[in-house]
Length: 152
Image 1 (cartoon, rainbow, N blue to C red):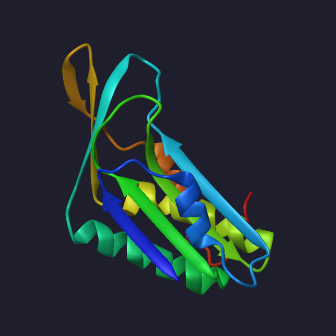
Image 2 (cartoon, one colour):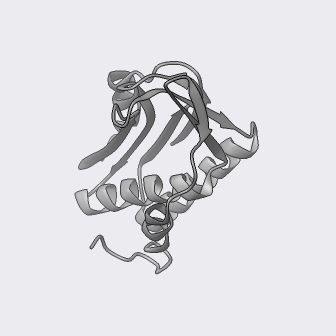
């Protein structure tokens, strides 16, 4: 099962975890990203390209299922205005074994950061600025160019 959801609703971790549990699973791996409360960020606003964003996330989940024989994969991503401490993204996978679950979860979040059409705008002291992409995100995504490369 693959589940992709992009909306402005709060992410319910318990509900999402229940949805990725699968018969035959020996492992579940998850990642939850939060709005950081550092550097005076008041709000973070995420915009996306409707339709294209969901298609990009679905493609990533399908790639992960092919590479690691996952039983389930879920990507839930918030859009709209969020405050520090709020959940931005949830990635969860289930697999027969822990190595597949851990690697696939890392692959999904690394690639999501560079491949999905989201745009971030931070507001600090009433001043809004667009967030530029980071070289570290590109490097994290690039490590998956080698097929089935294990975690470092």
